[in-house]
Image (tube, rainbow, N blue to C red; front, side):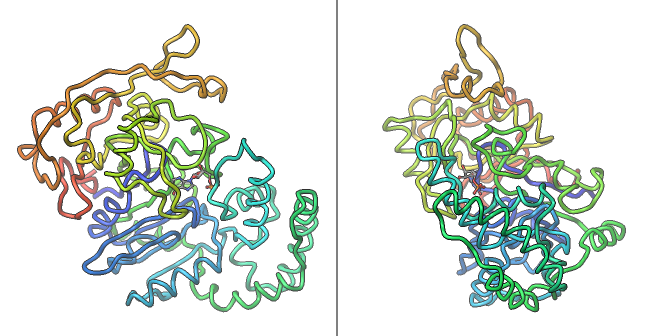
Length: 429
Ligand code: IMP
């Protein structure tokens, strides 16, 4: 029995929530390995709608949730989310949630710096979620981060705050933003400590035990490959590695434990925030996709930019992300469109490329090369087998498989959990 890692294969918001929830019901433990509370998953279970940002999705299915060391944890946001879902009747206790004692913390000064810097960038802003993700990862790499385990050591906290404040207050002052005071931050952390520490442990050890007794582990990715700090459309990316390899380093297991890599892709493309988006539509079709697909950011509420499926982009994500099978979502949003387009490459200057080059200038001027296909008039919504799909819709999916060089192993045809065509159970490896 394999473990499974789920990652986004575009720019995020591919409908991971439903797929992860469906897989979580087959798993024993669900593990977050990167990102932070910039992610947003909406899960509908019975009459309850849960909005999760930091908590692993499996918690709503009564599975053990683990937050790995690759995640940046805002302790206040974590406690607020626990309080929110507890009010909905969900039990989150140290028995059901474990967090890595070596995970770095997001402090109020990180979100302040995130917002101040975005403000200063003006036109060139990245369009971050403003939650301090980038600055927190910067501190981790710069070796000055406060980590979960430090909450147990007031003296370590005081020393680390000196170093952090020297750095951050200098920057904040330079950006004309309010600075932070050491004692207030120390008091804030000491007050949070007894509420966070009961959840903390070396999660690598627990995962090793679970792995050895054959428990099924689901690694839940956030954001997506094209937002990966190395492989995405840099600098318009998030600050973590979102590829499946991070499931190992971001939790403390070996790469062999990660198992089957399922990439999630929408049957079209969306993006929130700034950055290149070659197949973006600025016309009535783009508007229609946004309306039908309810394309608004879960975390920020921002309208998502919409466009045609970009097979060159997803192929690249498949290769660098290690994707072995695709879950294709929201096919029904395309129902009734007379003609569909699929991006198969980019015209850049005099050249046609089948991949996005690293240069942001080249990415910005990339003109998509399209293949055109006939649409279908009948509905695909709620289909549960290939036989339920119009022939043209099957053709569209098959063409996507060819172009991205990965099989569609799961097709989601509505937000309902059971409206899914399963070609292959990812846990079967
Ligand atoms: P940050 O992660 O807040 O630093 O934002 C960097 C970029 O990643 C921005 O374009 C965000 O809109 C995008 N981003 C971050 N988290 C998500 C997500 O969960 N879904 C989609 N886009 C995201």
